[in-house]
Image (tube, rainbow, N blue to C red; front, side):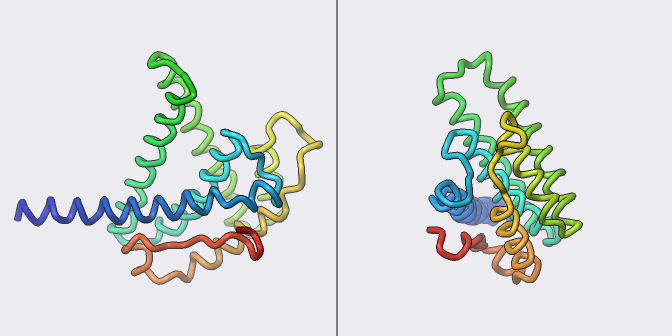
Length: 181
């Protein structure tokens, strides 16, 4: 029995690694930065990965236990990556917890605001939340986020009908908008 537990953990780790790699690959799609006005900066990439993960987590909340466990491990991997990135940017050990707390708050705040718009199927509300979060300092001068909002809503619809086996095997794919590669 004990050996089966370790085999299961190893199996889950492979699924999590595969799924996390697919999600980060989507977030790194150049077209989001070149054509949909997401800034190609450290924070722009954080924003893009956050919204990809939010879409994925919204799908896995309806999953049975295994899908939710994979999602939790992906959250853990995401925050480990964020921690690593902060350290690579030269933030010392003393400053990392403070930055992590701030970034976690940002992530969960985005989860709430995007979820509210997605639950209402309100593209304009979602585009407004994206503008506010991706361009917090530019206000009304921020680029239009309608294209990104439309992509998110399209992916949300596709994820709703996705077979559970795809979630459980870590093979969920979030295709970038047509023509963005």
